[in-house]
Length: 431
Ligand code: PLP
Image 1 (cartoon, rainbow, N blue to C red):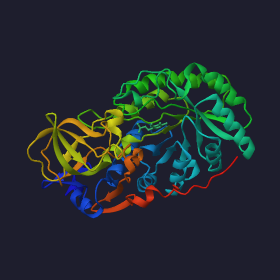
Image 2: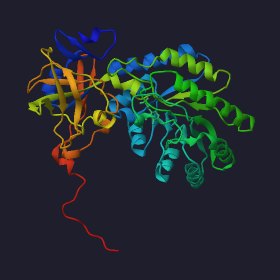
Image 3: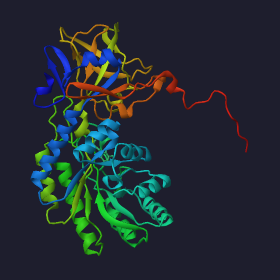
Image 4: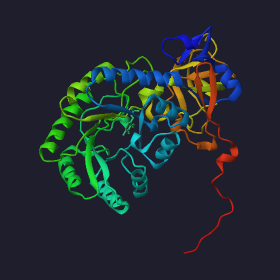
């Protein structure tokens, strides 16, 4: 069965698609569609793959994978990674709450993000997190105030924009080029670091970067590390003796179509060479790499239609369920759950009232009919987490598979959930 294939995850067995030992048709019959389905075995395998490469390349360098919660924040997925030994990287009070619910302790957490509020900083310091990745002078000063009010010292890493060229499939997933909103501009880092060293309620414990996502090559990391290492050394030479962490962010790419995935051995060896002798502990923040290939979005074909000489496959999953195709023009492989037959070229679209609501455009795919189930592949990262209720569509169910068992990890939203926080009868207030 699917369970015995070398790489766990989605596989066709006797013509039918399985996630590990569970037929997707059975999941659809029991929980309906659209449904996200995740292989926990694949999540564990991805974690082991990366951690094994890092451990082999840097036996002498302390390091930890801090899974980037934003990629897939389902509690069952978080718990699985916690059991693997991961820490987490969070970007909001909501992700902090999820991490704590999943069993992560404060010191397992690094807190990133370009726009943290005073309340979020307070919650982070109360946890207390391992360190806060600070992205501006304003945030540094606010953190100093918040820490002072709490009577604690805030551990800080400065997120640097290394201002390198990042080659990946879309501008929206590049974050380390000159002029981006993320991080402290490279030329400003030393003055902000001096300020951090001088402020009474923060301790400058590290430097941080995250240059983008779906990166398949080593070069952008090499360029960025080539800029960050000398900065690190200059700061130490200038008397900042508290520096001991280097957070390299996430970004490792996966295969959506035919592209080569990130070469993790090359990455691990490159990082080890780049930081050797620096006397730092490393944090990595992979998101997509750990979960993308573990997940599929299961959808059902509602209708077929021809318009203007074009074929349409209309499914019950739309852009509100999986935003990546419309938002990033991202490619997701789509195939029928039962043995494919025939072929057609079609736009695969959802029910949402937007012309930009599609899962695939002009896609050569198996001939499918209303009622057929479709698997949208590589949907484990930035899938459900970006889902919305647009068009008042309840968000899908999330299912996890472990071996030949499966369980609902997030129930499908119900119609009453859509209005749970709303009021038709208003309680007016006057000034
Ligand atoms: N770290 C930070 C600060 C991020 O913003 C992100 C994603 O945007 C990640 C890590 C994870 O990136 P990826 O999923 O590409 O590994």
